Amino acid sequence: MKVVAIGGSPRLKGNTNYLIDQAFKELASHGIKTEKIVLNEYKIGFCQGHDECASFAECKQKDDIPWIMEKFRQADGVILASPVYCYSFTAQMKTFLDRTYFAYTHNLPMKARCAGLIAIAGGDGLEPTLKALKGLLGFSNNMKVFTVSGYASSIGDAQQNPALIKQATNMGKQMAEVLTGQG
Image (cartoon, rainbow, N blue to C red; front, side, top):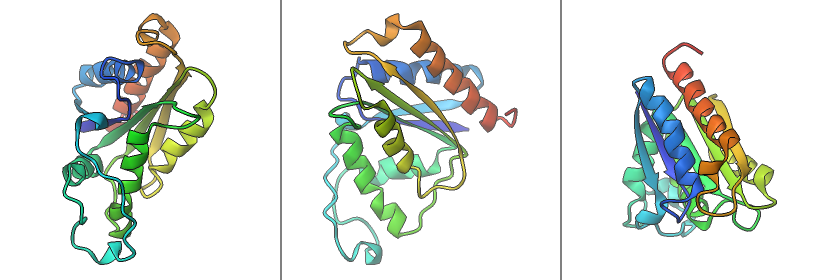
């Protein structure tokens, strides 16, 4: 079993990536493999909105999305994580969301049985961000979805927030229970 996290934060040592790691520790303690893909580390072009997308054998863009999408689609569980920028998820996560259109038009389902959503804000925008992240799962089967949300403005704030750490750990535990048949 494997859980793949798609991280939308441009900060490798930021709060969002820290909380992914907390969930991963819990998943690993249940024998579940994990892989974190931080979108900012890869070449991902913007969707070009081809009217003929559904007729293409592969996306016309030559970037890292094909292998990222394949890992995302084949994972037993997924985590989508983003800080809140301008009342929603980051540009990196929006670009990823737009590029899932190819999988949608080709009826390429997700294997995941559960998902985790992480949204961290310095101010307003948590609920719209969680709603938008959940929308990314819209072309998937019926899966259990768990969330982590809260406030952390500066790098390192999440590490000093026991409630956020507990949410991330609990999310990892809940996902593990689903994946191992205990939940």
